[in-house]
Every structure is written in structure tokens, then in C-alpha cells.
Image 1: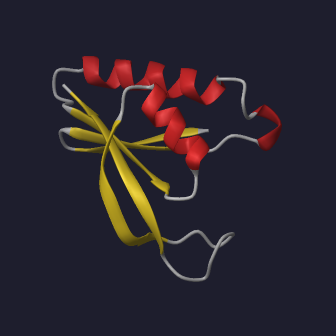
Image 2: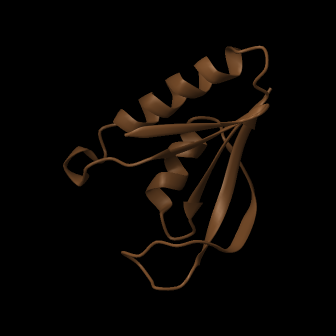
Length: 96
């Protein structure tokens, strides 16, 4: 699943993939295709995504798609399957 949320001139994406499909390049292909599509729109200037600081596979997907890590967001998102407290995330973006 790839979800996109429009926020004016930017789009925030999120994605999940069944573990049985990890490591096949599917999410990299999907994120790259969607990002190219979104940034081709004349009113979209930014596509961004966050990932848990320990989710190195997700970070790698974003980096392979040309996203740049812009920073670390302290105690930013809840991941109930990992912790009962908010966790730090990295924020990535690709801009035109």
C-alpha cells in the first residue's frame, strides 16, 4: 500500500508492504513512480515521508528514490507494534 496525502504544495507519502514481498524492489519502484508523477504536477513542489529511525529498509527505499534526509523528528510518531511511547523519525523529501 502506498498512501499519499496532499498538503497544499506538498504531498506526504506513507507505505507498507507485506514481509513476504520485502527485498524485491517493489516499494522502491512504487515510490519512485509516484514521486515522479506527483512532482510533474505544476502545483506540487515537494514530496515527503517519515520513517522510524530504526527502519533502515524504509530509509534505504527513500534514498534509492532520490529523497534527501532533512532531519530527525523527536518523539514524532506512535508505532504501537514497537512501543507505547512516541518514537523518533527521520524526515525525507524530494523537491523540484
